[in-house]
Length: 224
Image 1 (cartoon, rainbow, N blue to C red):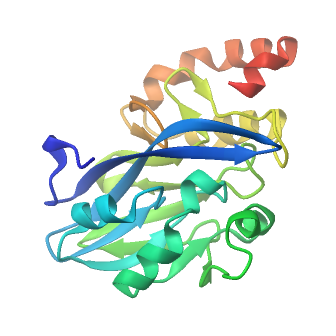
Image 2 (cartoon, helix red, strand yellow):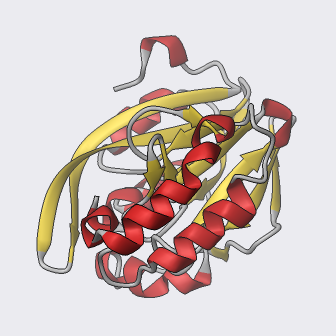
């Protein structure tokens, strides 16, 4: 669904789609946040998931500059090719995500590599790629400094780090990524997540030590 408060006007529009996430022999129902960043003329889409028609509704008649994938899990990339083809836009993904991408799209490669420090400009907005391995090998966040927000994919959520109990993940890596690369952003930075509600860097920062203790002592946290 296209959220009522986020009709296609920019600079940040949110679309929520529903479907499934599958890995390591399991399948789970999920709802995903698809983020559309830009203005009334052009946008970048972050994580094209589940429902290409609903995402297209959120884009409306704007030009799509790129479809950026924060990581390669199927619930974040399953509509990437369809959306890219529909709007004649390139798909970008970090190279380390190739094994996960191939599980969903064995016959289609991303068009461009997404690298740390890459800067994308759309509708007068700059987005900087911050590679944050842990949830997956090449998980990447997008930081829009002028908007005071970071799009965190599945790296950081309200209440803690993303899951690290499945293939291609690392708890120690995600903690390093969050502490060194995300919690160093200004405290009022809004963290717009891949699932669920948004939070802020300042809200999450005081809990880092608790996450480390709970994660190392309770493996279940790694599968949340």
